[in-house]
Amino acid sequence: MRKDYPDKDWLCLVGLIHDLGKILAHSLFGNEPQWAVVGDTFVVGCEFSDKICFYKYFEYNPDYEHKIYGTKYGIYRPNCGLNNLHLSWGKYFYKNITILIIYVYIDVLRYDYNKFILLIHRP
Image (tube, rainbow, N blue to C red; front, side, top):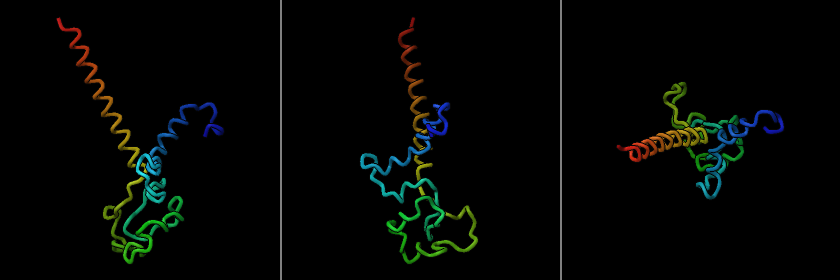
């Protein structure tokens, strides 16, 4: 990214935040298997699509050869609709939760700071 866009130093930070959920694969942050932290959000409860990023690692997923989850439709009826599908919890959900926690923390800091300012400026 740095090589392709050397004049956009902010893009590296965006890239880091974008892939933050992959930290879940590290032993200090959950030691999740590769198939659990791929970049894609995918449908669970049925056969894994070969269009999923790093699809080859799904052979280590316990659902890969499951007698129901490993079939084309799995737990779903054909044409059941998107609202009826269950999706994986991947890096995008993790990233969004992380960003939400940061925003909440910033609000807590603001509250704490304002409380401090009010205390020191009491008449």
